[in-house]
Length: 562
Image: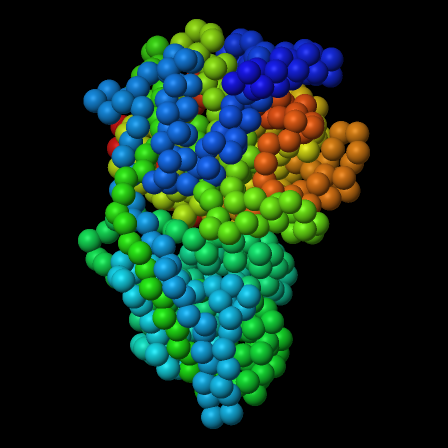
């Protein structure tokens, strides 16, 4: 810890020279940026250190991470949950592919294979020793969407029993930029790969393959190959088939183009057809075969929870969330930077994603605990298995420690901005709830403005833990520093984030860097604090805006509070 303390002291000296004076919130709570940044620097370095082994659930890395978090909670002075403690058990099942075959394609004039990882990623979510498709007829089912509210059904009149559907990532609005289709360029939940796998299973498909395109998916093929090659997790369910198809997976764009060509079709032409209303599925006149064998291990992982009881309204809660998990360790060495094949590593340290988010949350806990007790309870929830499909937050939402109907709001922190001070604050899910108005008030005091996320097509609102709160009606805020650097401008910020996605996101290169410009981190922690402190000291119950998909659930919970 000695080296971490050095980072801490350096951060304090450096921030004092470059930051603006502390501000106060509507509750007159003073926020000290210097202390906040010192706490952040200590925790992010420790949580992303090699000794944490990439913080994979159900691993030595998890135990070390949980030990660290519970010690940090105690040191700050957070209370454990009555009759539970600081840890909420999350029942998981780990599935590790022990062998994965190539994807064999057969037809009247076709006989070839797609190589695992290079051309296709394959797995099964079923809790079985082996799962396969055998000469399963391939059908192109467009975007694989059934959305009555958008008058869209790619499975209309289609029987996919025993068949394997090939579908596109994202949704027709993204492809056409047509505001009359879905949500235009911004991804809807129907564009998420999670939805597509679930819908294919509901339709009775034996297998499903999603075509990967960098822009439509929001990340390069290396992310797919790296994220799905090792152990994955799911919540334990009584049905061993888990309500999923026998084989799920991705096809690279090159593989998809070859597949369609083998079927006598032009991929780009069929992709364009799939974006038109009334699209009909296409029989590819080919079959697919593949087998995945698994090692299955049921285990427990844990959400780490600490809170400050409210002084006047202890049964009303503001919940901060950040996921503590990452991808663990690779079985083989991988380049730290795909663009520059430099030194190799086996540990996915996950410094930005999401050791930095947890470090911010611990800094917030320190700030709240340092003053008078908040009037409402403030909860700090570090969730597990986000990288496996938001599982820790899904379990909390299904088995809440604190009632969701009296949860005022969720403030989520995931992969925060580390590029320096910005003029803007990015709101993921811009225009969703009244929490945005509160955020704008405090952002303006910092001389900043709220802006829509620059890449709404990537569907980030559906890709982090706040989404499980939103589905239950709890207003959820997911915001972070933007890309308009105060001194270097938008181009610099955009290039910084693009470089991160290309070279470090879900790669072993996502490591702590003592040269990060943390001025923006200090501003963002202060912003998260001010929003939470304002809610904790008021009688307001923020709501979703009219027409929002989550408002009905919130209205129902409001009725239960009466």
